Length: 168
Image 1: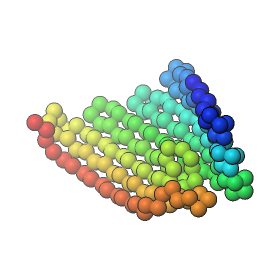
Image 2 (image 1 turned 120 degrees about the vertical axis):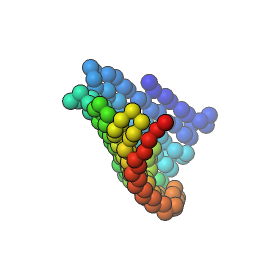
Image 3 (image 1 turned 90 degrees about the vertical axis):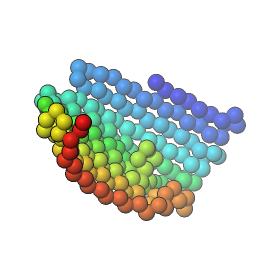
């Protein structure tokens, strides 16, 4: 699919596309966006590619990476990187999941200026008894482009939890 946008005065133009397809147990997607800002003072490009697949019967992984570039006043150029990794494993009574999201401070994509890690496991001991745990880390990275502050929040959160219990 694709999209094109232009304001009524022709000062702002943006075009983008997203292409996705499946091959057997593999999913692939890629795309990009190009924007030319008001009076050509701001221009940006973003490209990404991702792949996801299952392997060894009980595993699946998805990976997406992106690159962005922004030109401000045709003088300053900012590049950024971002993406995610998502891993799942499940066998009988045990499952595990791990997710990593990252975006450098100048990345123009979804995860601009963040580092998120989420992982969890669950083991079903019996019909009502379980053992579970998780770890979460969330951190913001200060983001400033051409003296425009996108994020000044200094946030750093870490949490780990283990639990053993019974469900009725």
